[in-house]
Image (cartoon, rainbow, N blue to C red; front, side, top):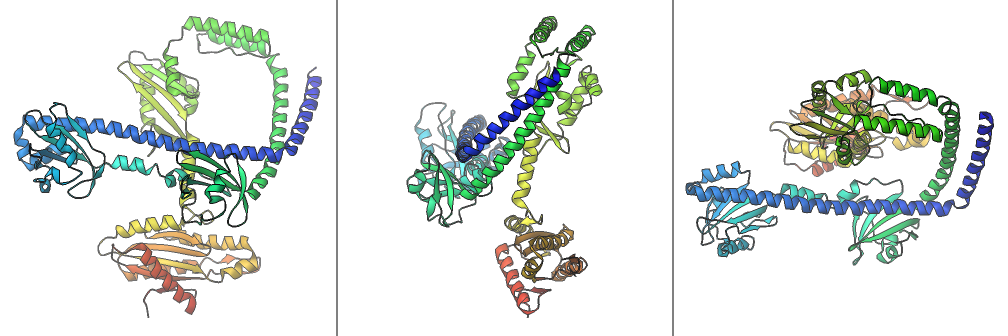
Length: 639
């Protein structure tokens, strides 16, 4: 019976797979375009969702901060009203500002003049003289005891610094107490709402691009590859994009066709495009993958059916007896889950209902589920009870062995100590995310009260690892593992700004000699090995003095820093060339060659030097070396 069942199953599933593949081949073009359209719509929807979320986050942040600032302003007014001598003393005003955690504190008299302040130079400023300060004069005319004004962040009248001011009317006498804050959090939140930032969070596939166009002017406002490209022709034009709301093929300025999808969001068009040739390449790849997936599914289903027929029915009674024995022994967490036919399912359901009624599961598990919102593991323990209530997934998520987890369930204090140890390994930049070991991260959200603790645990390893991978790919060259040039310039600029008095640093531009000939003679694979071998020598240099990068092709650059003088810089360069000479590379079975590289350097001991200028000087020195000698290094400005 079992063999006959499996034989017919194989025949039916094989026929179904062949039919599916035939339909897939006949309609693959339509399917692929529809999938790409849905993919683009999903990405565009994610962009719109991110924009909306950022706006809501900014609005909520402003609301919360405004309320907090108003409370501090009223607290300051209360102190000034109760202790008049505070406002007459700058040091006391500064102490009060520090105590209330505000950046500025002013007292404005009934004439609209700043009578006292934590910033001495502000004393005597007439609030009527500037459009930024003038609105606070309305508080002097307001008879309400709780009158206040919360001003949006803007440049202040005295120094042009971006500040946010909150003023409240005094109660003891006519006047206004004003506090000021540097709106760092608001400005950071606003920066996260730019198209460049949003696109940086959405990695694109090969040949794919995302961009935003003003629906009135046609101006390209943002692009996944930056705004340095040429957007003057082809499918970037507004008229062409308006025809792409349901997806359409449009030619670019290079003559190549792309599949373009646009979607209007308020006053902009959010668009996605992909090369037609890449789309077709994905089509054939997806057809092959579909065949592989279906084949795997067929094998899996056949094995599973064979297992179900052989095991589920035959061993069902034994499993029910084993579960009943466990329940009889006092393990009320045991769930009887024997399927395979209606009788087993009914029996399992009846036993589980009976056990449930016996143990009377409390509403605490419902509270855990409401907190999680997603599939999760949960735990709860009370201070007055030594038992820990856990779901079955806690031990797996926290990598706790089964025996140790069983012991924790009977010792709430030991489990609480373990949770505290886990939550000490928090991940920077993440909320409630902790490291279990090198390749596992979890989010633990806990609610604590006098009675005890309630917590939910979710596995966020894939999210954390993906963020780490994206950070690495955004800053490192894929072939060599060196820093990308743009990231290198940022790091070099920071090192230059931190240059200590009496120290020197140098920018070094390098170019491999005869690289084109190696590529042409031995092939690009050997050329890549040649680049990697050179990069490995750069990586061997001491990290405390060398910052390394691949600029493009066979061009590289270094920053030599934390040196005492020019002679130490030259010494490090000599060390680098010595190592280069001791690391020959095999170009073929018969030929080995020492890598030849030319370099130019420019050094400085002035922290105010611009990195772009220093790199430009090093480039000029490199040009001189390439023209005259090759295979060595030269200094900018040397005779």
